[in-house]
Length: 354
Length: 259
Image (cartoon, rainbow over all chains, first blue to last red; front, side, top):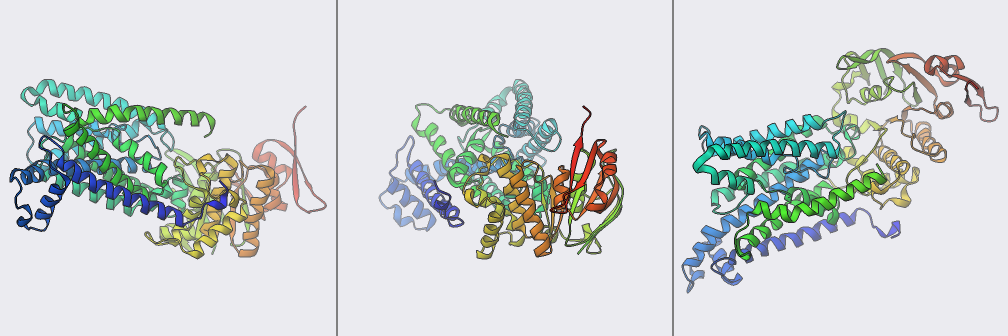
């Protein structure tokens, strides 16, 4: 490849548009197809009619259809589908932001232990029956757990000015192990509510409702907008803190705001659907390889790809596999080995360069 | 367009790094900052660039305390080339150089033709145009350092702070890069403040030297007056002979070691 073969400035935008249109269309198709998959199969045409009737408020489009079908799609499947897509998007965004702020491609809410912290906080709120804050008490306790865990992990791994990959991941794994033990202890204490804790440890989108979908969608969209506002600063931070500061970035404020936003996204996801690992880690990786590391394009693409992947995985376990495998188990079974490959490659690269 | 530093002190926690510095920097000169490892040179550059606040004393830039200038304005006028530069993400060379234009562009603005012209010029001057499309993560240390210098040139700031920016470069590229910096000083009226470990490079390029030891200013002045065997001994505790090259007129330093 000669240097001149890369026409500058135009290419990143074209690449971004190509992937965003492709992923957007794939996501839309996945929503429609997966709405038809399940115990009662429904064709994509009928799904389209049901959606059109609902969106256009035009019941005549349902003429001649089994009245059960709209209820299956609108009340059972769609809330779960949209929740899965929103959680996938929010986890991918959270991972992208963690990786950008910590300048570490192995960071994500799962490897940093933030998800486990959120699950612990949520379990405490639920078991102690803390209802003082109404329906938000579980997500708020999850956020508290996530924030405290993140602070502990950063404190453990900080050395000098930066975070080495290995320190950060090691600290995250240690803290997550302690939290998993604490969760198991809560499980032991919980008696009747054991199933809730187990659900948090493995993750699930079963029986999700429209309020769940609304909360996670609002979180994903809010998180995307916040991260996009700081996308250019994230690019500069990749050059190191001194360079970023010299280019006008208030690095302290940026770090605080974005770590808070990423933890909040992870906490809401965990409080709704439990611990689901590896999506936040792998999606930013794949999108960086496909469309480049510029956060202005990477963030929206990661959100789309995260939504698509999570929806595909949830549909796989809900409608394709003979029995429902917990989604967290599925993503770990698929994502874990991929993580191993990336980790090994980075270790080899570190021997060669750096 | 100048810096005045008055009774400046700085400490990391209880460890004092800089103490009682008083000096002024005039625009349009090439300054060299010389001293042993750990004498506070990098910290001084961070203070001058406005990234850190003095513990005591003050830094006046354009007659105003530096912290009274907005972050964004400073980022258009002061550029810093850090010593170590490692990037974990696969940005292309030209993308990194373009980041030097961010302070001049609105948060959501796209780079215009003029910005790309500055990026092209900066890449041409540092000799990296040939690999503009390569990933910075794949470059050698010296190539990467030239990319960072190009990024700072693209920033088009009036002041250029270089923190051992040529430490990874071979002599050919070090001379070329510092030559470009000197050209900016001479022809474009910029000011450079460079931390240099190589005394011969300092002798060759700097108009004035500031000698720093253990956080204090030992002496400062025109290179010809300050770069003496006695000062080198005070600073580094080594024996050296400083001679004048009859052809170029610049000084050079030869070290002597015990046999």
